[in-house]
Length: 282
Picture 1 (cartoon, rainbow, N blue to C red):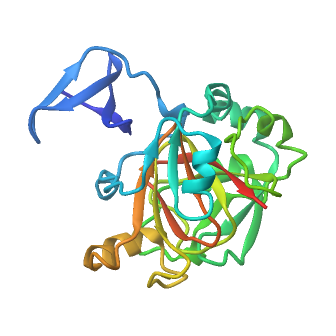
Picture 2 (cartoon, rainbow, N blue to C red; picture 1 turned 180 degrees about the horizontal axis):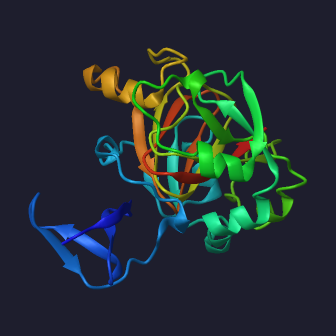
């Protein structure tokens, strides 16, 4: 049986079989695939790239995940003290459809976007067309690539040009006193991410793909090199961490929103080609 174009979606593999289209693939063993003859519910918005076996494992999740929470509980338990993952607070199905690859290329392909290097300080900026980024630069990151060699599309959005898209996004309903939300939108290849850094509080939501997060409180800075990629850190440093050195971590998927408090150290790793948006509270 010939499988083509496999992608990982919400815990299962979806593969393209000639003449059958997208189907759910399970595994009876490492060698024997079990095919369920139904189409997958999603195609990743057209953003999926070939899976890297090193990214199959989304790791553990030791961050609390909540389906319901009141504003009072959010403020008392998380707003100033620890991260939390929230589900079901908003429905961004329409925004997700607008963020498919074909839709974004149609609406924004010829517009200029600003890319940053994917290291801790993101000093270097490069302007290219959105189409050039998607078709030429958006690709999986290799293990030996340094942060300052990887161009990353996140933030630096022209709010005038992207206003119509952002107006369709429903942001998390909880804000902090005397703050307003500011959006940063991004698309990045599998294996890319930003090494450890910190800033003010905010939310991160994945629209397509999966994004793995690693977090440390402000008084526990992690050991890392600002120009070494998160993929390299996960491969070489993470496995040797003692329990006392281990981060809070979790992989978020579409429909999940991560809240991170002020000045918490965090690094990210995109396990798939991912589309995501953050709401920074400042």
